[in-house]
Length: 204
Image (cartoon, rainbow, N blue to C red; front, side, top):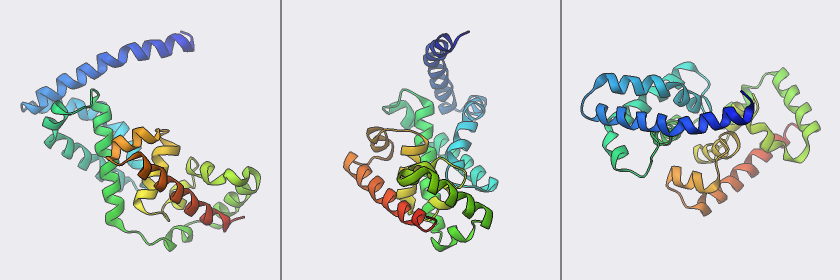
């Protein structure tokens, strides 16, 4: 199967999966534990990937996964009455918000992030910055060292950059996800990039 055919097949399968998720959610809302377990198995990996954007330790990721599904279980009625046609999109919104809340709870001290960089990592980062030039702050978000650098940002700034540069969401999509205005998303993104740029300048 060529790439075009593969994309077409996946696109046509998506509505079927969404309907199946909706049916499972309806059954789970009526008390069918097996149905919710199936939803957990279907979407656990995606939620774990979202959590891993913000947290490095396995136990932190697992905590976000568990809390996200717990919140989803008790909010199944909201999904049924909400605007999301996709259970996956609705669950992702919960996972991002759980991650955001956990970041805020941690209140990690900014100065701790750079101290975690090993000499080898700092040297690697410096070399990349010299090669990649002035847009290095955007490049850094999608690289292995991003978690340590992003940890210096506020939870809101970190969340916005991950959604924009890692998840590839639009300003409108982020606004809908977080219940923010588009203007707020743009302002937070601008401030976050400026802050991250100042961090990266220490390695230039």
